[in-house]
Length: 486
Image 1: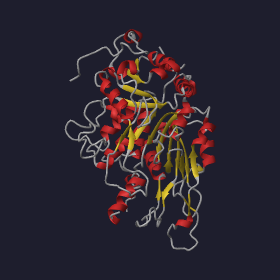
Image 2: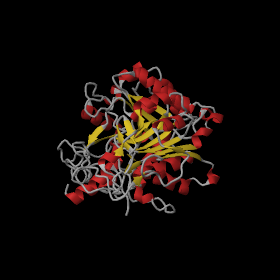
Image 3: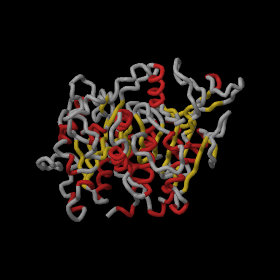
Image 4: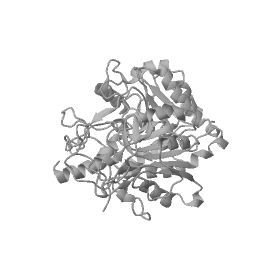
């Protein structure tokens, strides 16, 4: 039996059963507070669009930050054309939320063609943010299937990735509806820009500056100090157990699902010994049912954070998520011997939480993929994805703003090639980690995955392409160092 897990994929299965050519050129460097009209000269000649970074922020952030101009300058030293844009460029000084998002996107429509990368720096709140995410409702078929939790809407930055097309074709106020807003003249998921985001909450530019300092420290590392980046830390838990009833009135889970299967598949298919990539595995060693795969350590919160402190360029975890924490699922015992994970037999110890990020302060940065729900819901100011950036443990985080989809069954046969028919977080992780090891920017890999995975944009892939976002510096690569500066 194929094990497709997700909080979301499970819900779908259970509810089904229980009936539960470029525009005219303008001068995008004119007028912005970070304008760099000499960008071409700085790089020794014309800079191609794919080497351009457009930073969209606010006047308050641009003037209040002590590090944003230095961050832009550091990118220019590496041959990038950089422009900082604020309300002085895109307008709408008094607008917030959807109105501001539409305002920024309309401005991008006339400027994006000179840039390959877009970095959004500001308040991400979909309702009140000054550089907001867009709240979308890609599907309306789940109704109350999540027991009162909102499974239908999510926050997305894909709205800015392709500035063309309307995302609310029927004008009902709901953006990104599948089968409605993706019609002719509507939403287009073929990206024109690679998008990353650094949140700024409550106008706290000092906190932003700390994040930018960490990002610049990563790119300014001495070449001899970056060997750690060719190491991967896998922290993978069970998410379901055989016989578990995840929601009332739904059928029991048919088989146990261990997210370690995806990292094992990746190791065996992408990490032959001759590639010279090190890795450490932390799998479940507690309870009635433990992981069938060998690991270098047991999966605990303390063990995860302690191991991470040794320095890893890539971290991939799996577990049930919330905005500020991720939990393991442990089947502690089976006292009645019925071979079913009954409610009283299950525990949910923490795998990682927001407070743990402070313990990683000073740890060399890397790239994180979270196979967890809601970790990317950065409307919550202390969301785990952002906190890892703030303390420098991550330079880039791929995380979901809603229930994330994973398909462990697609990885059960170890010798198979990557199934590209669907887009989900685990398939995305495979493309990102492999591409990082080849020296490509993390943000670019996310963009490419949106094109190459789930090409038919079935409803599940469509939804996941909207809810999975990249937080951090989209231009960063695994091998950035001080040697890149010119």
